[in-house]
Length: 358
Length: 271
Image 1 (cartoon, each protein chain N blue to C red):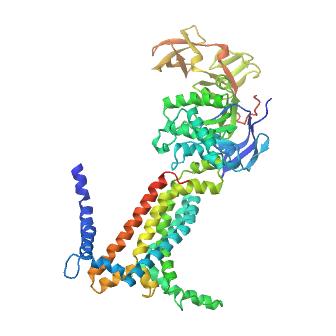
Image 2 (cartoon, chains in turn yellow, brown):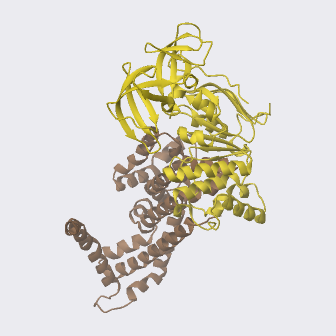
Image 3 (cartoon, chains in turn purple, red):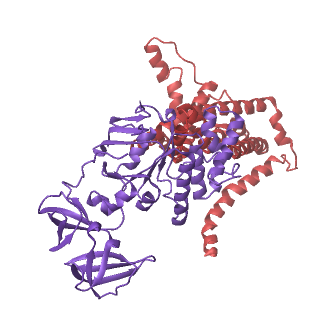
């Protein structure tokens, strides 16, 4: 196991009576793209701000390279932040913005000049040295904000929903740019977002958070294919989440219909939740599936059709490239390995899961 | 729609013409003529009389000192106000503005009473065995009156620009390695320059032209150019009064040009 670059140990943060983070434990290693993902108010930005030094935790410790930096002010920390809405210095040119950190560190003029040029090249904005930030588009300002942070050669770059203000196309372009930057620079990115698609596209590791707790940590594939609870399943992509009974190993009953599955060890006749991704449901001729239903709606989504099938008194969301018209009677079939079984949550607030990955 | 807009502006235009343009024209007319209404620069040249020149320099000196004092008092206060939450800062602003709801003359007369040789302050001082202070009827008293009366005009514009600075911009400076002093000098101060400029203008101009404060707190012994102009009008010497007014206007105009130019430079780099 590699050394822990940043470790958060037992972090708790309250604003008044509102507990934002509750005994949060998290660590990660070098050269990772780590994403904190969750709905607004889940504590992901607070977690980032605690790493950056803009918030002090009520209890717990932050370690950087093994050193306790909990009480270190932001200017003494060897990490840099890209802020939401860019936060550029509007009274300085682009070059002065990027040079800010280097000038503070009293680097030589030539060094600064080279670095600024290199950073601008890295974010594809050569020749923008003398422009004012106000004269740039949102995407360009965001690139400057990134350049301003990375010239300081931090070991960790913190990014707080940096693409939130950009339009869809630009956002997608910037996602690829960020992956490229991370690979070229070889530094760790900690990225905060509420956009699950962004998280799946860019991350090596995703930390799903809700209500101040870590819900699941894993690779994008793990998180998508094997969500550990209903919250994660619902938050990451579209899914059918049904209450079910785990009859015995490899057999689950959903709305009175028995489905084969691959999971074991949930006990016998235990109530569980099952997740079935819409693209994992196969529509077959009536009678050929596990249960029958009627198509109640049909929407063309470009890559696929989105259909709702009413079966066993519930709506089943189905994605398929094959069209079944509204009113058609169809059979529903699910492959055993496409059924994901989850324990029912004990309460609304999911317990924090201990981390046990890389 | 456009017609309508013009129509709506009519009362304002009328007001401007009646109470600003026409009086200004009269001042120019009287300032450039003599008693027989011959065109002359004689009225304006009155400024070169030693007593008037002295009044002009004293006006500039006192208003400059007052402006600087206001700036140094107002900036920290505006910073403190920004640091407070919305509710408590509006309370402080209220307390600050409360005296402005009283009549300007009344407030200044209050200072006269406070500073008087046998006034409240000296009574208290002698009661605790400290020497009496001779502040009334000195330039210091006038500066005190100016600072007291014009301070809010410095605080509010500075406060307004300070609250508009995104906290994350300051966080970004800290993040890039700047300590609190460096953040203030390199980011907060340059970004608040427009507020400082408009504060300076809003304090310097009324301080330069005041005659009431110097009249009340200077006891009529200390003449600012405003007092001289007032006296000229009192003795119905409209030509000299207007001539000196034009000189004062030139100084105001120049000071505004300087601040405007500095502001433009401030938008660029300051370091």
